[in-house]
Length: 320
Figure 1 (cartoon, rainbow, N blue to C red):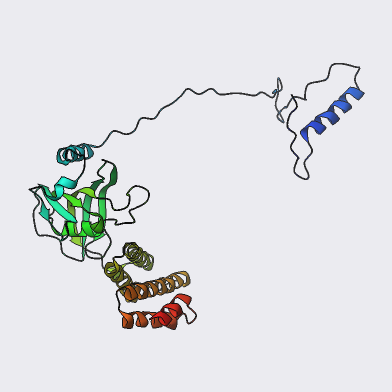
Figure 2: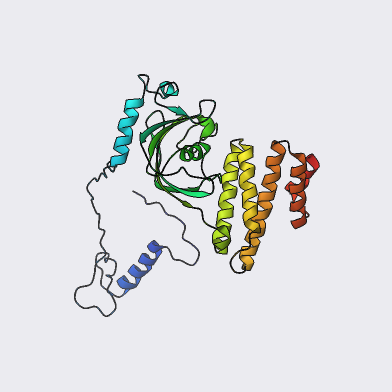
């Protein structure tokens, strides 16, 4: 059978041609004999028998890795889920079930207590630490976070979670039935939450503490916080929750105006400027969606003061 002959890169000799030249040199000085084997390889300075080239084939047995067993809290969550599911295997009956409390209008959020907590309810600006489990109607576990941390009222979580935690006490465990308008809406969340999905959450409020003082944060952490607020604004904007989006952008801009600890490096100063431009442009877009032309014009003018040739600001200013 003929072997495929691939062209060699420039500067390298074909192995077949090299072997033919070596064979010619050897046979010219020896009596006729069978074609010699390729010269054995010997490591420099080695003794004893030379190492002959060998082809070694490893045959590994078939290996299967078992999926990890569900944690105890997941097992308990699924038991509650099976108990709550209606005969048709959906959440539909839970919207009318007794023992649940409506936390928002339009049947988008309901609460069912599982375990009582203690103390006062959280306030806006405080930092929450929660344990979170969430599933779809088909039983798929799409949320699992043993220590999710966010500042209440800052738009750093979906609306359902902020409203849910506001109704809880430390140590409390509760189930929350969440409609798409309070969760991920018509866009869903790739790749695990489809469009217009209803979810069932189990939330445990682990800890409530005062939120961090942004003015005391190092510059790098403060800029990271600003960018996180901006990204949450984009999340809400994509789901057409323009009011929450605008609040995130405005809070990010306020963080940029705070006096920080120490001076910014040139790279940090450039990052700060880019974040300010993005937040102002995004604010203008949200203000236009909310029918706030004067505020949108002001945001565009602030962008143009920093960057006179900014295309987005010029376009939106002309459209106001």
